[in-house]
Each structure stands twice: as structure tokens, then as C-alpha cells.
Length: 374
Ligand SMILES: C[S@@+](CC[C@H](N)C(=O)[O-])C[C@H]1O[C@@H](n2cnc3c(N)ncnc32)[C@H](O)[C@@H]1O
Image (cartoon, rainbow, N blue to C red; front, side, top):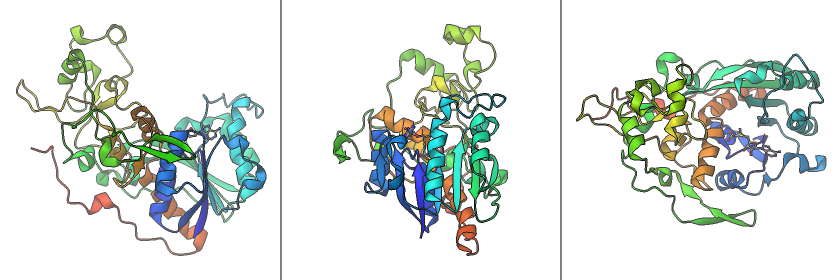
């Protein structure tokens, strides 16, 4: 088994993909958000999860590992021109590098927002990882079996020879769609609340652990919201609303923010699922079902947490801890497990010398149905 450390682990989207790839065993994960750490613990075990600020973990407690994964969050990238390596905002990068120096992995993987590659933080990383050969670029999650157009900067650092970024496993003609993962789920969620269960992790009681099916929770939109949703066709958004239904800010802002109040399409991947996917005013989060005309059959609601988790490619066997808002944040912040799995499978031959595995994807094995359900 290849030992791995997941830094800034969140709920464990990255670890989920590596574990699904087989051959990787997590030996340490670090996350300071209690509910995200608990979700990680519910799925991968509490013993190796360090629920703490990464800065408070002493060097002596960092184990050796074959692989380190993780993406230090960036508090607004500093300008590349300044190249100020002492910028205090770099401190989380210094922590990541401290782990790399101590654990001496053969390979490390960093994921981040795409503008990371032109940031001071990336320059710092390049300057301070001279023992590693780096490959960097932006990957589109849809190219790796995720039904979502999510772009992430990926950096692979290697001490076993340069490792290129993985090539798409699902080129455009094989992209999975919203329909592939939402079809068949009840259009009307039966509840608006998570079950009242409580679980104990790290000596604290917190909401959970919830099965993915528990996450199919609805909301109670106002009459005005419902009226807005009714006007938006698949692929459309705020520009489809009549003037009288527009809030003042949108009426006055004639350009930009094109995705807000948007509706998904059955036959395409979704756009990026962010942490507030349950608010249609924040992006293209309306359920794709919509037929024109007054008697048209429409599902006038945003996607549920379960639907968002599926669009992020989390398996339905995944368990969740925290309130509705906290679980949504974990889902929106995660690296899609299918993207992480593709990276993990790509790395394995370089780490073990074995030939690449014949990759098959669960969604590809399902029969393909085209068009919206009737
Ligand atoms: C983008 S999320 C990581 C998502 C994760 N890679 C996944 O796939 O699910 C970044 C995480 O870093 C955590 N974090 C931020 N600062 C931290 C710190 N100083 N120590 C530990 N965790 C931290 C946040 O709570 C957040 O969950």
C-alpha cells in the first residue's frame, strides 16, 4: 500500500478518490473544521484524522508518506509581480511545504483554483521544492468522469522523475451529464430537514452521520422565488426573467453574473457546484426539468444536497456530518472524488512500477438514457 497524507482534507473528497483507486492507505489527514473532520472520520476513520490547525502539528508528529495531497486555501492571491515570499498570506503554503520536507513523499499533489498558477504562492512553491520536478496545469473535472464543468489547477511534484498531468479519461463526447446522476431521484423531496441524529467524534457531539439519501432535502421558496423559477428554461438564467420580477440590483446590472438564477440542462454537465448551491440566486442551480407552456411539467426548486453530492461524483455510500449549511460547504469545497481517482490511478504506475490499471467508471457502466424523463 502507498501511504498518503491529506492536508486541508475537508470532508475527504480527495481521499475518497485515492481510496477508490485502490492501493493507497491514508496515514494522516489534517482539517480544522470540526464538521468536515467528522465527515472525514465517518468515512475513513477517526484515528488518523487530526482535527486541528495545521500550524499546531509539531514536526515530530508528521509521519513519512509516499504521497501528500491537498490544496492550501488562498486568501485572495497576492500579485505575482510582487513575489513577496514573506507575505503573511503565504503561511498556509509554508505549512504545506513543512509537511513535504518532513514526510519526504515521492509525489505530492496540490489542487487549487485556476488562478493559483499565476500567483505568488505558486512562485514560492517552485522556489522551495527544488528536489521535485513539477507539472502544472488546469484540469476540467468533466474530462475525468465528473458530470460537472469544474476547473481546478493541479500541480504534481515528483522525486521519481517528472510526471505529466493525466490525460482526459472522458473526452467531450463521453462527458457525463446532469441527467446521468439526477434521473430517477424523487422530484419532490419529502422533507426540508436532516434527521435528528447525533454522532460523537473527537469527544464532541454533532449532527450526523447522515446517509447520502438523507440529503435529499427541499426548501420552502417564497411565492416570488417560485414565480422567478417558472420563467427560466434549461440553460437560461436571470436574463429570462421579465423586468417586474427582477430585483433592483439585477435590473441595473445588465451584463455579467450570467449564471445566477440559472437552470441546469439534462444533457450537459452542470457548471461548478459551489458551497451555496441551494440558493438559485448564486448560480446555475435550478433542477433541469422544465417544459414550456402553462401546463408544462417543471421542477421549480434548486438541486438538493444529495443531487449536489452526486454532481460532485461522491458515491451514495458516503456519510455526512454537520448542519445543512456545513454539509453544503463540505460538498462545494471538495475535490470531486472521480477527478481525484483519475489522478491517483495516473500516479500509481510511477510510484509502484506497475502498468496502468484498466480504468472503468461506474457511470459509464450504466445504460445511457437520452433526454429528460417522462
Ligand atoms: C478547499 S477545502 C479542501 C477540500 C478537500 N481537499 C476535499 O477534497 O474535500 C480547504 C479546507 O482547508 C481547511 N483549512 C483552512 N485552514 C486550515 C488550517 N489552518 N488548518 C487546517 N485546516 C484548514 C478548511 O476548513 C477547508 O475544509
